[in-house]
Image (cartoon, rainbow, N blue to C red; front, side, top):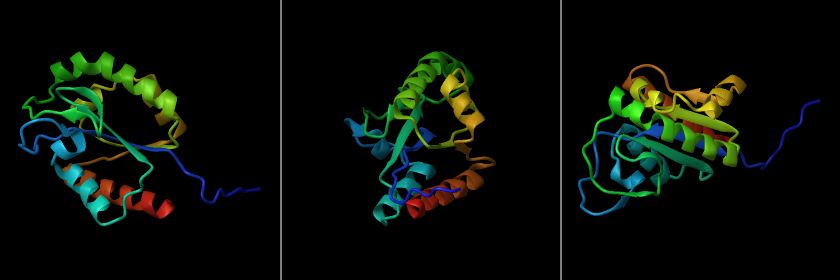
Length: 161
């Protein structure tokens, strides 16, 4: 027997990296407004054009700040993520991510991060568990492919409601 839950809200998470391109405005801005790279442009367009699923949380792995939410206020900065920085952040970012994943109990997680950023979440037990249970979708390939997969995922989430 198959049950379909119509109108049931799924908790979804988008886990993405910060971007090298940033809004140069001085002062503090929400992270989602500070970063201006490709993934952020896709998210902003989806929101502007009305096909963003409001129940998607966004967490960002930042080279400067570690794990942050889209509405966390951040200043302009110029710090690149490299292997040394990823390893410095790994324990803290993995622990914070585990705390969020345990508390929120997401039904689906979409990740779009490069290999260096993935190193920063490498100690996350909850990410490993989510991979084993099949609730993580990871963007794969070069930047163009990853951006295309991000667009497709966002539109699919909107269609799912």
